[in-house]
Amino acid sequence: MLIGKLIEGQTAKDIVTCSASMPVREAIALLASKRIGALPVIMQDQVAGIFSERDVIYRLADEGELCLGRAVGEVMTAPAITVTRDTTSDEALALMTRRRIRHLPVVESDKLCGFVSIGDLVKARLEQISHEAEAMRDYIRTA
Image (cartoon, rainbow, N blue to C red; front, side):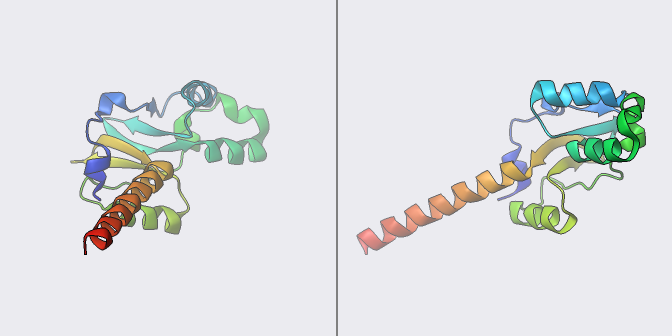
């Protein structure tokens, strides 16, 4: 399945993002209020990086609460690893496994057009396997 199929109906306006200048404390509050694990960081209409729970944990471990007043751009993971609508879900899962990440911005002409998590991809893969298994059962019944 293509990533484009997974993000059908999703627009850039639907994606919760933050700016590189946002204070870490505010970005953490945004993550908590939306119950999400990561935010694409947007600079000049492009994805500059990803700000995730892991970024917070690593900085808290290194700096303590001083990091909460820093700008997201100083603590984000950059550059962002991205995919396109034409990337398959299996390719995206392999990339996430290889790079040990859980979120991928989807870009088109360097602009954010979607955002997927490893949970989105696993769910899609499980649905695909379920459909294939049902088709196989139907085939066996009618053969």
